[in-house]
Length: 248
Ligand code: 13P
Image (cartoon, rainbow, N blue to C red; front, side):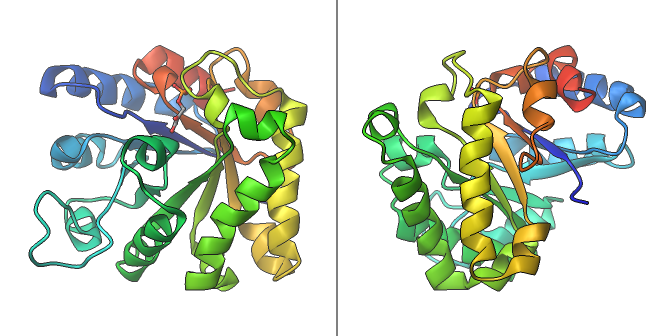
């Protein structure tokens, strides 16, 4: 049985004050979260504070991105070792906003994935298609290509220590959630592709859904066979909305 993981991606949101309130609010509701793992991914500068606030609450901490380099002259970058040092367990790599707004290529994402694992962080590898790619029937090709970049650099066995997040780009921040059937279809495709290489890794790897998930649609998405949790944007920014998904 795969454990369900609900992870909040706070993106470029929050302040010291609002984040303290948010973490305390989530921590207060953790007793109602049965058997699911819960993580939050704050902006870099708030990670040490969140690690302290989250200690002993059962809330894990992640980052939203990571450098593909270990150290040196890379102005503005934050390494996997640094993230580990300030309490991160997870790091999101290849989010569609990194891909589209910051020109991150499949190969860049794969290098970040490797850098994260090298330090013992669990990468949350994001994949997903644009609306026009879905409409032209290219969803599986796009997702396969995104996965292949990681498989060829890190090997299928690396997925035993990783999480995949299927985030259809057209569902992110739009209020237009994939139906449980649409999401399940792609999740099953991803698991099947991995199973063709290594059945036991495929059985183990958590595949999260992301894209306008909220307290009203979480239960039916999470009930699908190959959906092992959620990567939550907007609804992770208030304790009630996030806990509604964690307890769905
Ligand atoms: P929303 O939940 O706001 O659609 O964002 C999803 C997402 O991008 C999580 O990484």
